[in-house]
Image 1 (cartoon, rainbow, N blue to C red):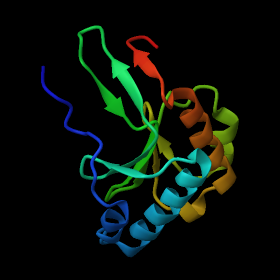
Image 2 (image 1 turned 45 degrees about the vertical axis):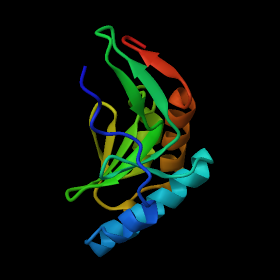
Image 3 (image 1 turned 120 degrees about the horizontal axis):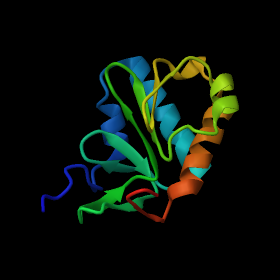
Image 4 (image 1 turned 180 degrees about the vertical axis):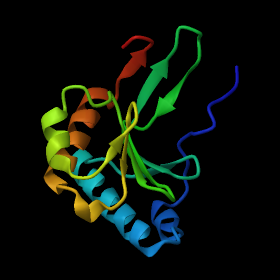
Length: 142
């Protein structure tokens, strides 16, 4: 079975952040990194080439495929700052209403500009996601 492409690395998180070419996106990424470290109490780790993760969980599918993934994380993408937050956003309507301009994927929160968000609402989302999955093993259907 193929190994997951996105895995924990020993690469420098500060070095990665310094390499983000867009100044505003770099500043947002540095702020997001500090916020997530504060909320989770975990050290940032570079996963793959572009995801900064905090904590970890293990996933296992019925097919036998398994791997590790950050409990919470983000990536400074060209189009948006992307936050990876399991278990998704069901039950977070009130927080999302306060958050500010964003769009959602199944477990992704896309933000154009961090300064436009309610920082406390973002902290609540990160804390909820981290508490839900950090250190756990999630199996298909969990």
